[in-house]
Length: 298
Image (cartoon, rainbow, N blue to C red; front, side, top):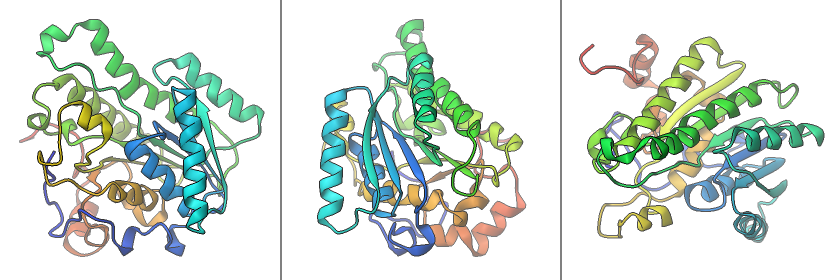
C-alpha cells in the first residue's frame, strides 16, 4: 500500500492545489454520483464535491439505512461549515447487478437528472485465499463489481444528453494492487480485477476523447478505512494517508486541469503541480504509454 514517488513531492495531507474551494475546481452546475459513497473514502469524496459547490451529490449504496444516514450526516456537516450550496441525496442500488444499475439510470432519466461526474468508488474485496482456491463464484463477484459495473456506468454516463457543457467525467478509484501484486499478496484476485478495470478504462479512453468524457484511474493512497480495519489493518500497520487526499484529488481530477491525464493511472498522493508542469509533464506528454497498464519490460 506504499506509494511510489513518481513526483518528487508527495502528500499525506491535503494541500491548496487540490482544495475543493478553489474557484477553478468549482463543481457548480454539476450532478455528481459516487458509488459506495456512504462511508470511508466514498463519503469523503461526497463531502469534497459538496464543498466544491456541486448542484447535486448522489450517494449510492446497497443499504438503505446506511445511505440515508450518510446523506443526512453529510448535509448537516457541510451546512454547519457554511459550504452547503446544492442538494445531497442518497440512492439505493446494487452495482453487482446490471439490472439494478440500469434501474438507477432509468430512474434518473425519468426525473430529468443528468449526471456529469461518476466516481467509481465501490469495490469488491473477496476472501483471502490462494487464487486457485477462491473459486469461480467468488472470482466473478469481484469482477462484476470491480469491472463490469464500471463498464456499465461508463456506458450510461456517456449515453446521456445535456449536462454541464456536455462533457462528462469518469473517475475510477482503483488500487496500487492493480500494478503491484506485492501489496495484496493474500488477495490476488482483487488486484487482478482492479488491473482489468484500469486496462478497460485505459482502452476506453483511446476511443473516447477527453473533451467528451475525461477518464482517470487512481490509487487513493493508504487510508485506514473501516473496510481496511475489517481486513486486520491497524493504526500501527502503515503511515496512513489522510482521507481528504483522495477526496480532494477527485475534485481536481474532475477539472480541466487534469485533462492531460485522460486514460492514465496515477496516485492521489502525487503532487499535482509537479504532474502539470516541468519534467514530469514533459514525460507524460511525450509518452502515450506512460502511467498505463502494460507488461513490465516491454
